[in-house]
Length: 640
Ligand code: MIC
Ligand code: SF4
Image 1 (cartoon, helix red, strand yellow):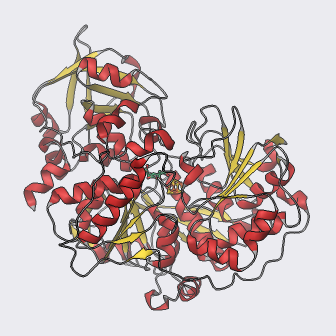
Image 2 (tube, protein in one colour; image 1 turned 135 degrees about the vertical axis):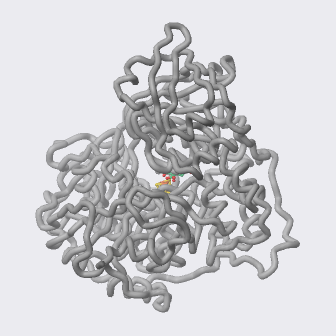
Image 3 (cartoon, protein in one colour; image 1 turned 120 degrees about the horizontal axis):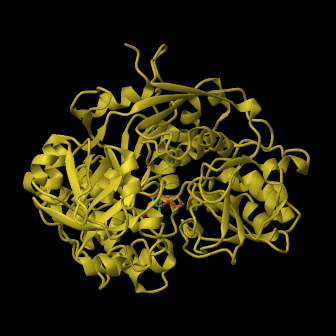
């Protein structure tokens, strides 16, 4: 039977289970990545597994999120990560070297290999035909220890691209169009596989913009074939030997198929506060803008920033606008400098940031009160920018450049002729900010600062549960709602006790106090609960507060897996209308939990009026055992 590209990679890496839709499989993981906001916890967990050295072909520990260093905490994490990487045999990408996804694409990614990353945008690697999957840090720790990564066999969606992008329309508009059609939950349980004649004109960085933001569809991954464009890109990185051709067999069958006609696309923009609130730029009209931010792991490539510089050349940013630029990698920054583009950006009034996540995760550059910010990033959830009432729009660099010059959201096509740009020059390849692990790390001392607290483990699942509903939330709650990012909270990622005070702080500031008062509780949610980031802290901090279960209409993939990993029951309403019956403060109870879990039917009753309803979980036998053990760490330690 002819195979899709996705199935080819899955087959090559299958170590457990059968490739049958809906069943659970275990995949061999060739490479892993972590970043500092998730990595500190992941390495603490790796240490707890008691394995001497990483067992993957390659593991890289990046520092790119917490680089603001308002206090000692971030720098202490960096030092811990550097020493832990050397001790356990992982590469270390120093702060300043760039954003994990961009650097990985440039320096380490290999077509046809698997990459598990403790960051939801790990599918960026699909831009070179690699299967990149985002997960919680604990799953990455287990993969580093040589364990397989488990997932439900995904459906494969073919995204057929035809035609050629018109002037002023870019790769970002492709993924915004897919988001417009499918929504933030439209990719759930799927891998998006790109194909068709439209690929021919898309460079690897453009493809990586598409695979990066595929995370916003809720998809497990997104992948492009490995073709001559891929070869060209790898050759420019001095890594041509990493190339292999990889494409779907002719006649491969897909579960779903959509076609995007590139010729017909126009400049698009995602309106506040969701990446799928996509409109044409024209539809928005002339909206005054206060901030423009260009860069991040979505649009931080050399070509993206050169386009911005070219459009702004000889002009200066509008007086109302603050323009910030965060290049995707040090390689991009150095190449921009060598080509004189950095000078041009500075002359246009751009505020150049270090190559790191920065404003994308609220680490500085918060917009003004009720400010409008146009960003070439991938997420615009309310409050993520650091300003609660800011309105963040997501676009490609051409729309951002137009906004920076005019001070308004406006159609870039009104700016006249599209700049004619030559093929990008060869990048400056300089790996001196990447530290290879020593052959034997046993003698390396791991240095821990006072903010790095020992791991908290959950207790085995009790047979009887009696808990209060602590909060009822609506559809599409993000992990940013559950545990916010930003410069105040991010430094607490390795101190779960301190972090747990911030659970749901934007929705219910007294949440952690109430959890303390009731000695734990339960969360009731709508559809797509836990969308967005991979941060396992959105499960770990609630676990610390004694949360026993989340009852939802549906879950986002990574967050559901994280809940299981930390021993919190992720339950679906059997009848979604029961959601309406529940309120904050309700006391719910159930007995014989282990037996009920085995049968995939859990009956809960409300204490005060006896109202009964059923929930299920659709988990595998392996996951049920993890839950009973009180989480993956307890469960895995038994098998090492
Ligand atoms: C994000 O873009 O939301 C983050 C910050 O990169 C997260 C990871 C984290 O919370 O540390 C992600 O995407 O997984
Ligand atoms: Fe960093 Fe933003 Fe990319 Fe997340 S989405 S990895 S915060 S640049």
